[in-house]
Length: 362
Image (tube, rainbow, N blue to C red; front, side, top):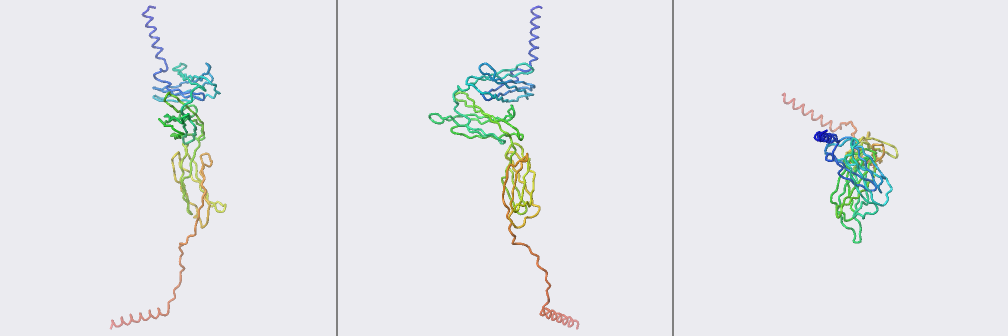
């Protein structure tokens, strides 16, 4: 084969090889990695739509892989990000670690990225996450500065809050440039609908940019629960009304039960279905007793029953029905007897009328 033909053949093979590549570093990228001895997270950004992406995360210590997690991503939309979290579950030794993230499609490696960190030898950060409490409404944390010989040193920090379902971040939000001079409480709500009785993880990352870029993270798990409480109540002898406030991102679809008792005996019991409530939603529910309560003292109990039949809130009170002193009474009918004086007067009047009529005819 001549040199010219060989050149054409090799160029053709090269073009063919390029054309069958599933993706390129310009189309899909691992854009961010964070790792410590507890967990790691990484974000993938795609410019185009891709399917069947496989990502393997490896935690390496002393040249050996000591923990590994695989993520199968069914698809990723154009101009979208997907963040995954790997929990290592290891007993760490002091030393240097490396996190390796390998992304592939159709058996071909697209990209490999690394992140290095140390455990037990690094300088103590100027800030730490003192406490973290997640629930079905959101998350609350307390950031505290490190206390040195001269007291607490003010720190500016960026705080990122993640809600993780399984290994995927389903919601995230951020606070920028938080000035931490002392113990600083922060809170964020989950602004997405959550499933009932489902286990989620929450992940908080704090970044301090000065003097060097330092990131700390902490994760906690929690189980979601629907929730609602009674905030207002009105009651009298004819009925009652109660205002319910939603306190969870799990939709509340339960009931409120009104129970009236007298000396331990149930007089009325009415169960009303609540409108669907989520965090911050409130609705007023009204009921009327089947019979108006008579004079006396009654006990009223309101019970909020959750989606699973459990009691979420209870309110006990009384209804005092007083005797009505302005009662309409129908007067008794009586027969009026004519008095003698009235009879004489009537007779005398008739005689005068008869006399005048007769005089007129004459």
